[in-house]
Image (tube, rainbow, N blue to C red; front, side, top):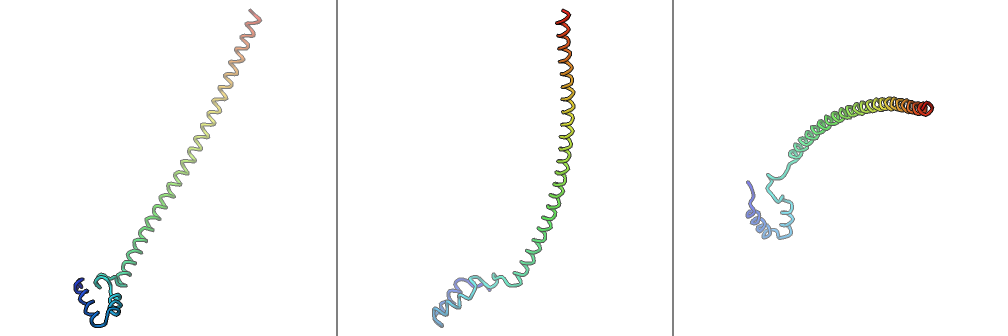
Length: 124
């Protein structure tokens, strides 16, 4: 049975008449401000704790799964880093070869032009 505010007030007035105001305040201070049905019991708290521990275990499992996925992604990123480094090395090597060929070609052209000018100067 739920205790109404009116019933609570009537009890307080009767207690004040019977035992006085200070003992009444002490006694009513020991009672919950709501009905006993609204007060959590040790069993309620134990059940809540068990539920909470279950949720925590579930979240820990999900975190472990995410950590595994992150580790996998890190491995893939490392693999991509190695591929990029390899491609950069290949590109650098090719660039050096092409520049070397270009240098040789320019040297050959320069020598050809100098010889042509030299020949034109002495034969002309």
